[in-house]
Image (tube, rainbow, N blue to C red; front, side, top):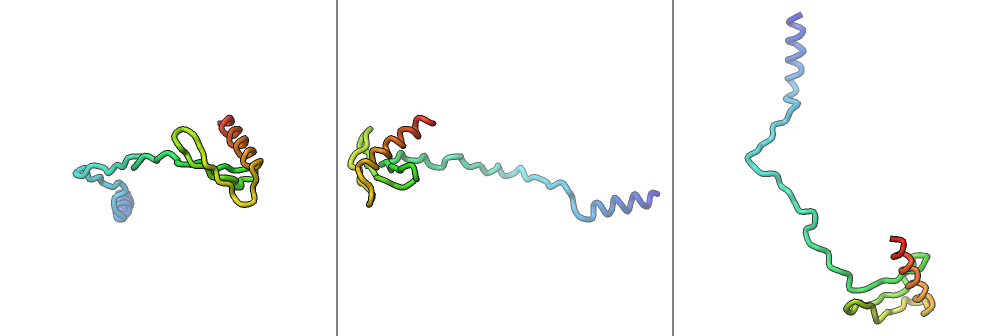
Length: 92
């Protein structure tokens, strides 16, 4: 019986230790969650309900101006995209 226990213990330890030792001589490496702070957008892109890009506007101060329409869209499409953007902001 003692021989059987000795063989089992020898077989269990023959594959190496199951517990890995930790080296405390070096501190753990940690990295900050944000490496650099993202900058604020310098423009606004307007999309319609279908997800199509309608216009690109530049940001000047606290307002947007100089909106450039994408090919194939009208001023009404831009106004509808503004309404769509406003409604999206209300949902959040």
